[in-house]
Image 1 (cartoon, rainbow, N blue to C red):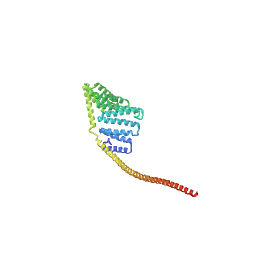
Image 2: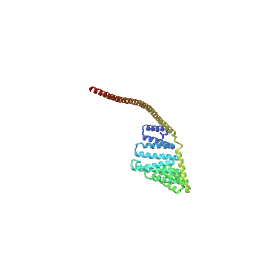
Image 3: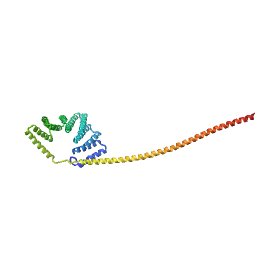
Image 4: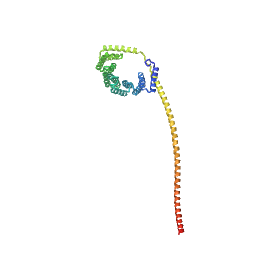
Length: 354
């Protein structure tokens, strides 16, 4: 739908996929959905938003249970994409950090980037070539040309291996030649262009051959060979004009606003669900609070009743103790009276007996 320029329908499909993936906790499809949204954002040059979606995709791909080789390739690609977004927004130190993370990752996974060891190693070489090329671009932006030249050469070395992407090598050679041209290092420029020409046996894109003719014009111009410079300038102008005609004035419509609207709509839905959950929590907390008050009231009431019962028990105990003491005193008086009576009776009986 996106390629058919049906942008509204494309956005609706992407966000429906995202919504369903979230609803069913499908981490693999969540990762794919936000990855595709990030790619569209990147193509629309909305690099800050693209970085956000690529980071989300990186998080969810870590939770996804998929084929190891595919998962490792996606992680490496996402790390590269995040770094590219930072490069585009001139956050160069952050970009280098993510490129370093990507390098470290492929070093660890160099034997598990494909289903077999040989293809995995080729994928490893290709990945390092791409990362080194991107790092070189960052150093160009930082105006650290010596580092840029070093990383372009590393990229070219990896991409010149069998089963790697020679188109990437040719693009790196063009960028390296541009640096030598900027430095007016004509000998190094000529050597680089010779290497680039030799690579054409593997084929070359229209853009590569156009850049080659532009650089050859510059090389001969600075080498004071005006006839050859004029020849390449003429060829370059023709290539450039035909390229512009081929592109025409077609321009992709910006679907960034549609994507942002869909994103806001989805966030609102999430907030509404969150609000409903919050209301349930509030009701539960209210019920818990009321029950707590009732329980505390019952405890206080029982404590008060128990205190009264204890007080009454103490009073009864005191009364029993007092009665016990009175009985003991009565027993003592009784014994004393009986002793007196017994004595008197003995005296009387004794007298009678006598």
